[in-house]
Picture 1 (tube, rainbow, N blue to C red):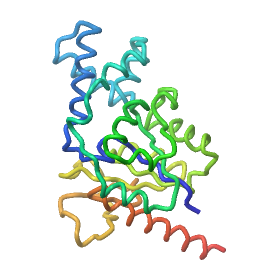
Picture 2: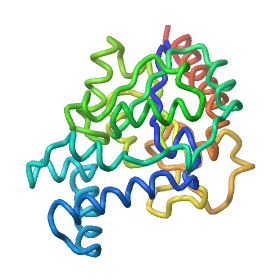
Picture 3: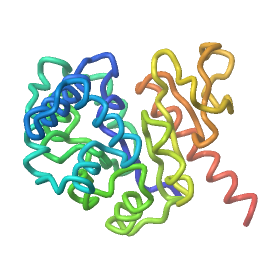
Length: 243
């Protein structure tokens, strides 16, 4: 039985084209430049390596340079979200119609998440924010991040659905029986393996593939209610067949 919907925050609940995350990324590079006296190119290379090896730049800094995490989080999220995103009444209505408890699961921190949710006008739709601090900086895609959320809610993986924009965050969720909905980037991701599980396979763009770790793929967040209903119905059907 489905009980919880786990939503990623950045570039999931608002368009990837907004420019907000590139602005945060610039703050990350600036942090590396200023704190460690790096030139821009070296800072960018270090940022990319940390992201690939540790999941986030912060995790890499904590593992290799013993950075103060709060100092880093305050610095990189010092961005006016109102310059990049607008209130989204359509999304509010879609979320409000979903009869499940909704929570945020993000590698950002809670203050940033609250600013984004408030600007979008959807803060009232989420009962909790599970951020990088709650995860003890063991962020997605680490298995421990999802385990902490499940334990805090007292829920089994199969009783939840994760809505994400990053394909690499899905595999460990699936290991815990969390069903997954992937919001695809506008031009697809050439690194993922095809599975073609779309709400409407005949309607999706031919050059976009759905990775195997996604139960369903959607091309815009406004399709999320349809995707959730489809996965919930499949679960009910499977349960009835096994009983």
